[in-house]
Length: 195
Image (cartoon, rainbow, N blue to C red; front, top):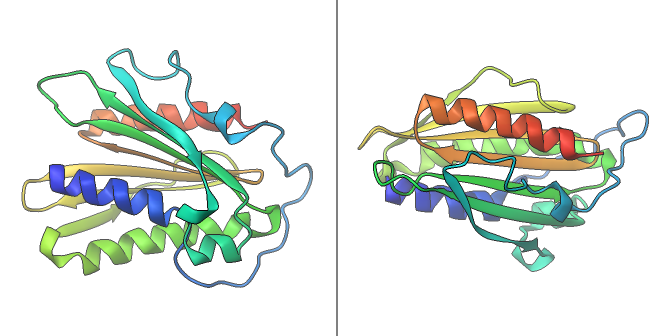
């Protein structure tokens, strides 16, 4: 499980919406620019379950981004990691990754990122991973969800991605189906912060 979690954290931070070339999409109608900074979109301590603690948060910068993100106009971002304070589930985390892109490219990111995760589970044969596409969570302007299983120890990792206005977010957790339901609630909270 530690191996899966390490792979996924590294993968999610470096690959968040940044893998393949695609043509620009048409702009979203209406007011499609966020009015707050990514650091203001991070969960407040009152947003997360009481048994989780913030362990790391920081701005993302262009030097951490892959060419796809830069080529598609990545502007700025932020991330935060929260650790569960439960000895019976050591290493359980929630991770929030936020990126701002030009509105005309925002619709490209979810399909690209989900494709990258699916390909990664297939190519990472040494980790014996598989994925399942979950029902669309209906968050923000567009969203998607995956469950990744480490078939070696049956540990699970859940991912929800969504876009709202010009903001893309990935929210991850490892754990149980109950943790996914918490993740789903957190994604709703995250989307509501984008104004």
